[in-house]
Length: 354
Image (tube, rainbow, N blue to C red):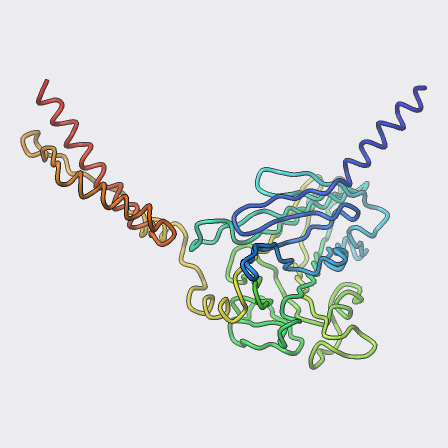
């Protein structure tokens, strides 16, 4: 009887571990595959008047995107290495997938990200954290293969800040002037941002199968196009690499990449070329939302309640509500500032009447 109960509990835990997570925020969605627990990324698009979530990476087999860990020159492929047990959980701003072995733990967090120019969530930050369980230091290198698919349908697979039509394999190193890599689709696109603090040390744009088959580093000669027998046909991907890190005993390290989603490829390429790199967010917020400063004045100089000003402000608020999608943060701040002034006038008028 007890064995049956424990078997039921274990079965419940195992089933729960493989239960898919599906969460959404703003324009984007994160889901996990119910068998492999691999994450899948989506963006909300409108096709023929109908809204749907379009996959940003290949989701036919989520295992085509994966993480490889090189620990002291031993190679482990997360989700395939028997040394690691996989689990998942939903966290405050995304999901967390854990690969745990006897000596270490790799945690992949896929988090929602809102770019400075957006009112809603429009991207992702993918964190990789590695914890060392042992009493000796570890030398670690990280590789992440992202099976981008959007650009394969449109005749050119990628675009970068210097080349709007990347059709051949290439390597982008840390000293490159490239600011981003876009997988441009017909209705949605996704870009890896390279001018952020959260970014890889090197990016390889290559045929997916050659990138997947390489043990760790992509040391093959770069080829023209993304089709070559016996490798896959018009099948490309991004390889993200982080150089060697030393993890101290019982310590941990963390790396990350930043991804932005957008509309059709040509639109996103034009938009990024004009707006990226983004301005410093703190400076931008200060510019768009300047603090309202009221000079201290003698009571006699405080403006009295102005009925016409109230009517004008109400009309301004009505216009803003009627055109809410196009109202800028600066216009909202201006309305709030005028409201503060009226509130101050009203308080003064009330104190005078008392």
